[in-house]
Length: 213
Image (cartoon, rainbow, N blue to C red; front, side, top):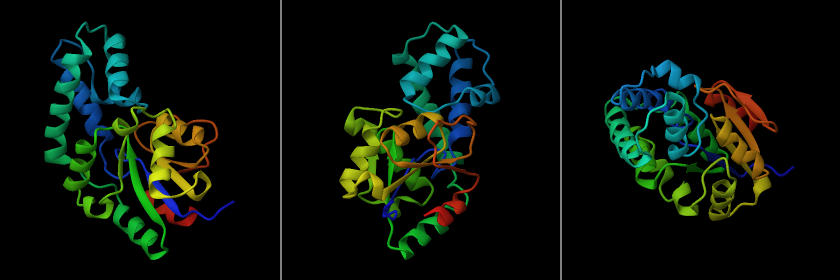
């Protein structure tokens, strides 16, 4: 097996500590339409994936007859407010990036979110300078995790083959994308405790990534 030359990070829940805030935003938005959804309940169903699918699944589950066209902008606006006031980087992330740099291992970020949202999250947490020119959004591939296209696109743009890369994500749908891309995929334990067959390894803290690389 080739030595890892590039680590591809998911953004939310992997680089930035956002998944609880995402669930909080779901709770706030759906309660505006008379649905009862606590942050904890949202967390128990959280699997990642495309935002429209998450909203659709929640809408069906709670029997809320509001269109995705209404829910999506409201959710993004609510989440942006929570991010601006509360978003933090994941514990140990700066040390991990420094360690990768010292080993001459490249890295980038691949996220289902729109590019401006990814960059805003990285900027709020002080991570953006590390990822200049290395941000890849599913909106560029028009294909969202759990499809593997974004992962493959990121590797290609960074100039590496699949077996030279390692992918890290905290959600089952994210890990599924990595596994389907044929990439060594590491799951970071988080809000979602589901996993996907073929996961290379599960870690509890980002700092453990250093030992695997």
